[in-house]
Image (cartoon, rainbow, N blue to C red):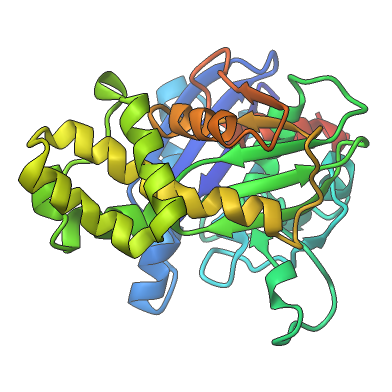
Length: 334
């Protein structure tokens, strides 16, 4: 058996990676189909077809067949109710060992002749959720394997807060034993997209997001400070004021709006009952610039946490795949 396959499905995309026994990437395939399509269509036929096609494309690219594959392991929203197979979340605390123990092996012959091993997501609690405790509850599918991958690059025996920027911002708390103890989700990325494209502020920023090559720390901090003083609604409208009277530079204003959108996330981290953090918690920020750099600058500007680090991967391989491979090794089939 020469290969291991990692399969990751998110809201909008599915990615398959084919790894050799030295864990070097041999081939990959991607489809712009995710669980959003299942939600829209009312069934998962398109997702099944996309997964099947991606698996076959990756194998064909490597000149291999299923007889050459030792294991297929999947993570992400593929284990949700709008994925391929719904797998119950693991309850915190959950690290790589707990996730490996909860992996489910499922036969899906309409997709491929080999069983697929599904890694579950993680949730903050097992009990009932009501109006008195809902703020402490959160869930994730996919970020748990990304967290496992990131932690492999940092010393054990310390607690961490992992920041995973995106349309859904994820903040993941990890204890000294390397177990996830809680997560917090924000839709600040979606809010930024809506404000940028679907409000009166669209004109001020030219319907453009902040870019890595035009990142402007001072404008990001200005947006953050304005939102902290006057709230997100007023701070957003102030982008139009700036555009009318101070500057027509849409790149600067896009940076300003980025700072506005992220301000409430930092408040959420400090006041969340879902996370167990202190000033001495090591914060590690992943993702891509400019969002990654903006989070680092804002965390340092906020000055609550004493230790803020930037996670820069050694290669371009997906974090989800790297984490899935770590869990695959723990299954004892490689």
